[in-house]
Image (cartoon, rainbow, N blue to C red; front, top):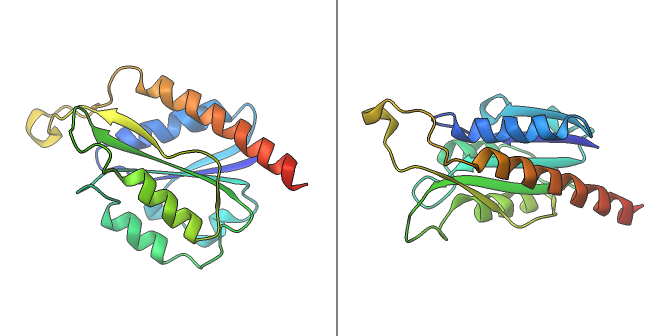
Length: 164
């Protein structure tokens, strides 16, 4: 199973989650984690599973992510399993308005087959620019990401088995 984890990260928290997922999958899969600003269409060649993550900005997918996704050719994710995750603040009364469902929709519009519901990981509401605090992930979120990634691999393997 070849896996590509693509992420956009403003303060480094989404990157940490992507790297934790990649670390978890490495014993069972050929996996790469790449920032979306370095993503090229060739990165999808030979990939079975694409996982994409982003912070939630203004209740949605950040503009740099939308721009990168719009630049990809239609159908580039055909016959690939896809999953999406986001980071968002907690507590937040509008937390159902988050990026990952919209991100998953973009992935399916590019031809991907979803294998899991969008997943959210929580960050503290501290403003890194004011506090200087960079690690905003709530305790346990990296473990949560590792478990979610392991489950994705199982789902993708099952889906591949059904496709054969």
